[in-house]
Structures are given as C-alpha cells and as structure tokens.
Image (cartoon, rainbow, N blue to C red; front, side):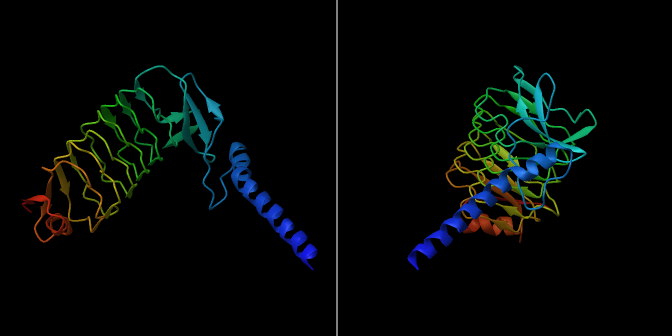
Length: 244
C-alpha cells in the first residue's frame, strides 16, 4: 500500500510541475504570435518581440505593446506612443530600475506603469505621467531620492504599495477622481521630505501606515467632514481645512 501511495504522490507532483511551467510559457508563445494572453495569466516578458535603436517591445495582443527593454544611452527618456502598427500601453516591470536616468516622459497611450519600473533611480528628478494612466505598480518609484514633485492624473484607479516610498517628494496632491478611493499601505513611507499632502473627498480609505516616517511637519490638507481630515486627526497629523 505504501508503495502504491508513493507512486500516486510522485505522479501528482510531476503533473503539478508541468502545469506550473505551462502557466509561465504557454500564453507567452501565443502572445508572440500576435494573439492575446490567456485570461488569468500575468506575463513578465524577458526577450522583446520587437526592437528599435532604443527600446525593446513585447506584444501584449494584436494592438498593444509593453516597453520591456531599454538599449539607449540617454538620461532623458521619452517613451514612444506607438511602434510599427502597435500602441504602447504598458511600461514594463523593473524597466529602469537602478538606472541613472534623470527624466522620463510617458505618453498618454500608457495605462499602466508596472512594479519597480523606476525604482532606485537616484538621479530621476522629472516625471511626466500619462494623462490616461490607470495603475501605478508596487514600488514603481521607490527610493527615487531626487524626485521632488510629480503630477498624478485623475484617471488613476490604483496606486500600489510602496509606490512613492523613500522618495524626495516635498508635496503631493492626490487627484479627485471617481476611480481612485484608496491610499494603500506604505505608499509614501519614509519620504522624509514630504511636508504637504492634499487629499480629495473622493478618498475614503487610507492605510494606517501610508505616511509612516514622513516629515514630522507633514500637513494634510482636506475638506471639512471628509475622510481625509478625520484620518489626519486620528493619526495626529497637522491639518489644513480646504474651502469648498
């Protein structure tokens, strides 16, 4: 009986391993043929499908591209909005992580900046975000010490955990939007120079640790009777009431 159970268990393990490997690659191959990725799969591409002199692109589907590689030498980056017959809609995972770029302009075709896309860029001081951006991934701008300001678009639906932690931001205005209601955990953690945050009435949930270890002089600006103002008072932050 023990021998039979061992054989059955080994068979299950082999089958599970095969499924895991299939999940990593099967939709990648389909995407490279111009088809859509299977639902429920998140592909982190390695080799680009298409290249120009500066960028490598990964086909997401028949119409859209992810910027997955950078081959250029410029410190001032302008991401293209199209390549060949495709539209560029995603800035890939870790694309410029640990690089020495100084500025980046993201076109309005882009709807997602993935995790760690610009993390640990010590010289990054200027960022122009897409006006149609929906998602800023986890740790997207983590440890960008020289990033003093950024304009967040009203199109945002999600700002990931640690997205702006350990940055040089001195002030930030959360956009008033029907699609963004939450400031997630550690979003601005250890942004020691952050002294002013404006929170709109559309924000109805803020993680307790969203502003942990920011400046002791941090002022939260919010409307009277808003969640933002009650949050600030609950956590003993300085407040400034906005006039309606």
